Length: 199
Image 1 (cartoon, helix red, strand yellow):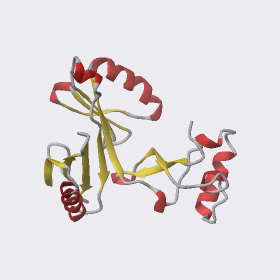
Image 2 (cartoon, rainbow, N blue to C red):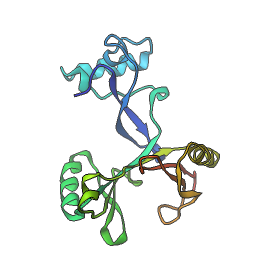
Image 3 (tube, one colour):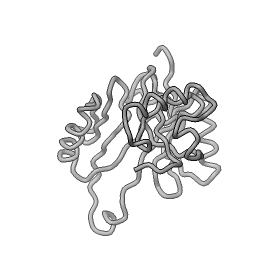
Image 4 (cartoon, rainbow, N blue to C red):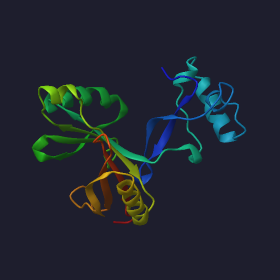
């Protein structure tokens, strides 16, 4: 259940697609969440949502672009790719999402509603203490240019991040993919990606 300080926003992906992403914003109960903002776009979206559900905290809003979050895709590690695939195939089918890309002989799967996957599962078998410690998460933030990807990488390294892939093309992903990867202090794989137009 979302509390009064949370809303659901639409994250813009490449090719004009979007996915729903939970985002924390500073709002009051009489603010954006409940549709009384001065922004007419927010008010109209909130009114439409509230007309179809009594659960205000779970409304899905078409939020003004200034509130969208540039998350391109995310990934999680799983211990059993077969059982995880069966689960996500079934759970995501009603959302129009299915496996669209496969790597490493089926050990890495990318789910998408259209072309570019926004949710990945990656088999990573661990045991003993390592299994109890959990698995790092992968999050990719969408950049507006190659320069932004480079700036992200430089800033992340300067802030104590560890290189996990310098800025550059990743044609093994898609022909228009330009990304950089850094491990954060907790070992999570953080990325910035720019999708080159018309490639």
